[in-house]
Amino acid sequence: MEAFLAKLDALLQYNLPTKIQELTNVVLIWIGFAFVVAMITRLLVWGGQWRRGAFTVFLVGLTGCCTGILGVTTWRKIENFNPFSPAGLVVSVVASVAALFIYQFCSLFWSGKKKGE
Image 1 (cartoon, helix red, strand yellow):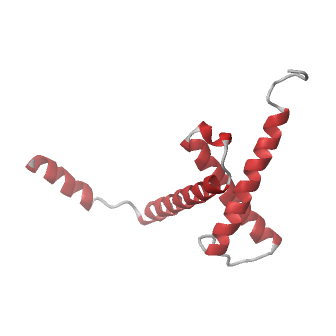
Image 2 (tube, rainbow, N blue to C red):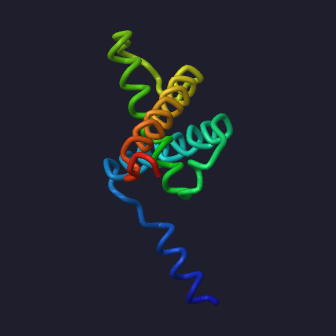
Image 3 (cartoon, rainbow, N blue to C red):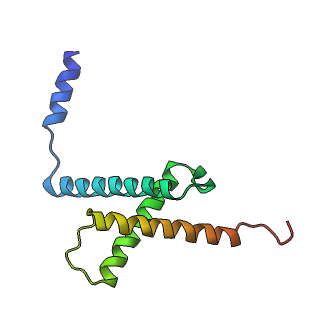
């Protein structure tokens, strides 16, 4: 047990360089924000499209975060927009719902089924 605690103490004292730690924090914040957006989208849009798994849900949330925030900052030309605000959350959820409907619309045409089946 003491060997484990000694290794744990050594691990807790290890610090990453500042730039890598900041990058890690930003990535983890974006992953968490995309997950929250995906869960809200999942609550709003209920149906069979969510049978694909948790990774697909996460990708829908990440797509909504990126396209929604990029769209609002370029369309409205906002320079200091905080994406982790209530406005950023609403924009991201709307964009992820739109991305999900576009995905469903495209999957109807490219599902591989022939006419009459």
